[in-house]
Picture 1 (cartoon, one colour):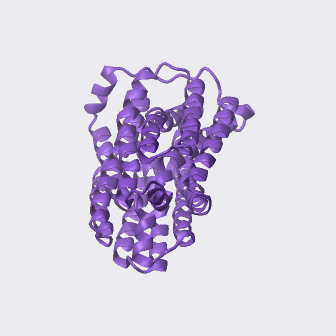
Picture 2 (cartoon, one colour):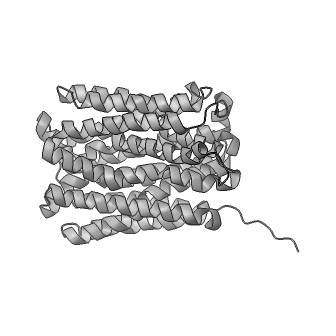
Picture 3 (spheres, helix red, strand yellow):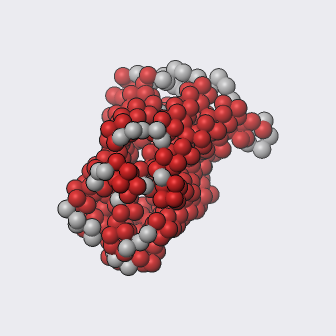
Length: 390
C-alpha cells in the first residue's frame, strides 16, 4: 500500500474509526448502568437488558442486512449506517423514559448491525490479498478503542454530567466519523452478492460452523461479567466511578495493545496460532477475576490480562472465516457478527439472572466455564497439516 493514493491508504483508518463509533454505541450502557438505573428508576439487571435486547436485534439484523444490502455500493452504505448511529445516539440523549430509550436503541442497532461485518469485508477489498489478515485486525482496533477510551469516557461523562451527555458525545463522534468515511473511502466498491446458496454453502462448511460456535461461546462467557463489570466492582470492592473507569481504561488499553500485537504477528504466525494465544489470555484473565473477586487491585490485574485477548480473539475469528471460504467472506463475517451478538445476549441475560440474585462472585466462574469450552474448540480447530514432498 506504500504506492497507493493517499485516500486509499487512509481508508482502513476511516473504517476503523467507524468501528469505534459502533463499539461505543453497542457497549455504552455497560459504562453507565448505575446512572441509567438511577435516572429511570429501574434495577441494575433491568438496565442491563439494554445490552441483552440490543444484542438480540443485532444478531437478527446482521445476516439479514448482509443479504439486503449486498449489492449496494460500500461507501454510501457504510457512511449512511454511521449517520444512523449518530442520530440514534443523539435521540437517545433525549429519551424521556426507559421504554423510549430501549425503543430507540433497538431501531438504531437494527441499522447499525451491518457496519462491522461490512467494514471487514470492505477492508479486504482495498488491500492486497497477503495483507488482508492484518487489515481486518486493524479495522477491529476500533472496538478496542471503544473499550480503551470510549467506555472510561462514557463512565466519566455519565457520572459527572449524566447519561444524556454520554449519548450526546457518541452522537457527535458518529457524525464526524460518517463524514470522514464518506471523504476517504474509495467509491464503486462492491462485495459479492449474498443469496440463499451462500447461506447453504456456509452451513455445509465444517470449519465455518465450528468457528461460529467458538465465537458464540467465548462472547457468552465474557459478557456474563463484562455487562455488569461496573456494578460488580462497586459491590465487591466498593469502587467508585473513578476506580470503575480505571478498570475499563486498563481493560481497553490492554485490548488495544493486544490487537496491535495480533496485527503484527498474524501474517507470520498464522491466524490459528494467534487465535490460540489470545483466547488463552482471555481464559486466564477471567479465571483470575473469579479467583480474586473482592480485591480491587488484583481484579485490575486480571482485567488487564483478559483485556489483552478480548478484541484480538474476535479479529482472529474474522480472519479465519475469510480464509476458510474467501468467496463467501461477506456472509460468513456477517454471520460471525450475528453469533457474536447472540453470545452477548446470552451472556448478559445469564449475568443478569445471577446479578439479580446477588451471586456476584459466581459470575466469574460461570464466565470461565464458557470460555474454557471455547478455548478447547479453538485448539481442536487446528487446520490440517500440509504433507511435505521431498
